[in-house]
Image 1 (cartoon, rainbow, N blue to C red):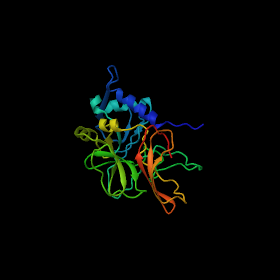
Image 2: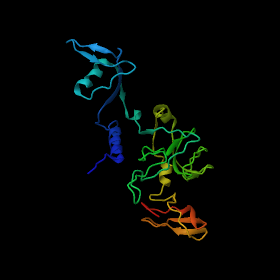
Image 3: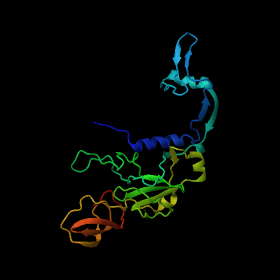
Image 4: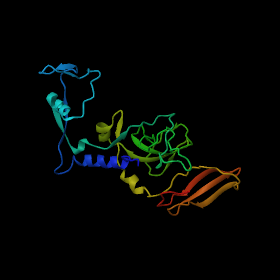
Length: 267
C-alpha cells in the first residue's frame, strides 16, 4: 500500500535535532567556511582530474564518504553552534495588498466527498504546509487566515494582538499568532524564512475543538427566509451554535455564535 513520511514525523525529527544543541551530553556542531580557491577542473597527484564546475555553477557534491572529506581539506574557520543559534522557522510570507491568501484548513489533500478529487487551496496547494495561509505584517506580527471572503484579494493589512478573531474591512478574518522579537528579527529573519514560536497569551486563550468558521457547501433551496438563531452544530463536540441567514430560500450566511468545544467535525 502507499506510504508517506508525514509532516508530524518531519516535525518530530526537527525537534530532536533542535534538542541535540541543548542536551547535557549531546553532539557538538560547528558551522565552517572555506574554499579559498576557485571551482574548476583540478588534477590529482595520480593524474586523474576532478570536475568541480565553476564559481558561478559549482557541481552538487556527491553523498558519499569520499566527498565528505573534501570540505575539511578546504576549511578555513569554524564556529560552534549553540542552542541560542538555532530556532524553528517557516517560509516567510509577507502580507501584500492585492494578494488572495489561502484559508487555514486541516483537510487539504483529502478526497472530496463522492469524488476522487483532492481538496486544494485557492493557490492550488494540496498540503497545509504549502498553502499561503499566514502572513508577516510590517509590524512583524504573524496572522493566520481563517476566511478570505470567498477567494478575494486582501487589501487591508491586519493589525493588533488581540486573541479574538480579527475581521478587516475587506472581508478577511485573521487570527493573531505571535510577534517576532527584536532578536528573532536580527538572527532568524531572512528573505526566505522567519522564526516561528508559540505565544503564551494566544495559546492559553485557545479552546481545543472550537469551531470559528463555517463554510457553505450547498446553499440549498426552499428554506424559510430570515435569520435563524441558536442553531446547534451537529458533530462530536458540544455547545456549538450558529446563526443562519436564508434569502430566497437558500442559505446565504452562517455566523458562529458559540464556538463550542471538543469538535473534530461538525455540520
